[in-house]
Image (cartoon, rainbow, N blue to C red; front, side, top):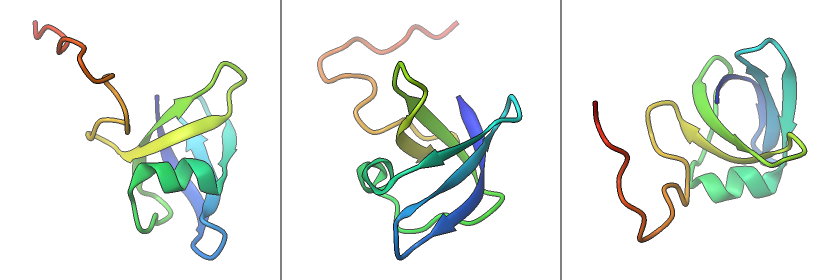
Amino acid sequence: MQATVRGFDPAARSGTVFCDDGTVVAFGAAAFDASGLRLLRPGQRVTIGRDSGGAITSLALAGFPLPGYPPAGSAPAPRG
C-alpha cells in the first residue's frame, strides 16, 4: 500500500502517513529503523507494510521494495 508522509520527528524516528484511502496512520521507530532510511519529509511518497492489526511494520520510498520482501529464496513475480 502506498501513502504520503504527513509528519516525521527525526529525534523520535517516528511519524504519521496519509494512506491512499484517506486514513492517518502512525508509525514507530521500529518501522522506521527497519527501513534503512535516514530521513522522511512531509509530502514524500512511501510504500508501507502493515501487520494484521493495521500497524505499520515497514516503510520504503515509493517504487522501492519493502525491506525483507520478497522473502529470500522466493521466485520473482512474473511480469506480464
